[in-house]
Length: 217
Image 1 (cartoon, helix red, strand yellow):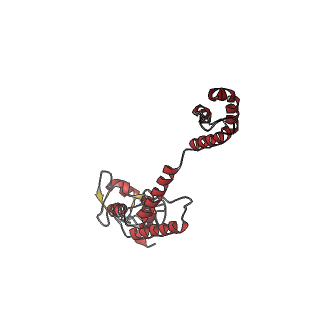
Image 2: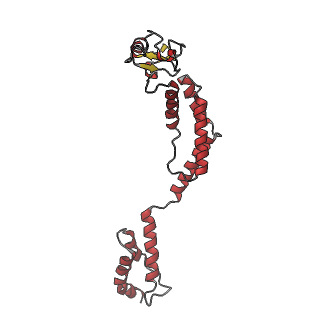
Image 3: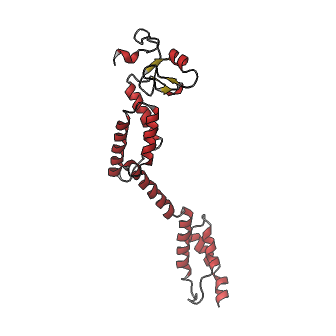
């Protein structure tokens, strides 16, 4: 890192000579010490001391890393990941890897953007580009998830239908139950209780078979 990158352009104080000097970095990659930052950006917008870009105090970030390009890349990734969240356990690994490669290419393309406004506009244009693979892949995932939700029956509904099928198969085995006497629907109301197993439901139905026979004799 060269000398100009670790020197406050306003007060000329140097972090080599003053180890406790706290520097902040702007979206345009320029540094400024904390004291100068508080003085120049105390009220609203002010121009960057080095390039004149209009900035606010909140646009500056503390130097957690020596390389300001690393800080810039982290900021870009954070903004992209608010929109394009990475998948956990993707179904199609090959296609997901293609999406990750597309994501990394976009990050690399955005690294040349120095102004926060340019970054915001780039992401906005990216979101509106429906033909971009990074968007079409996300649309495919959402459509697939919606289809699964639509076709998936509630667990209790599936359980009830299975119980009714078992009960129907067993009840029609009851002697003297004629084809022209349909199985009363009241028999199947027992299956609406999720805590009743098919075996218990059948037992309850069989216990009431005398009343059933009397009604069809």
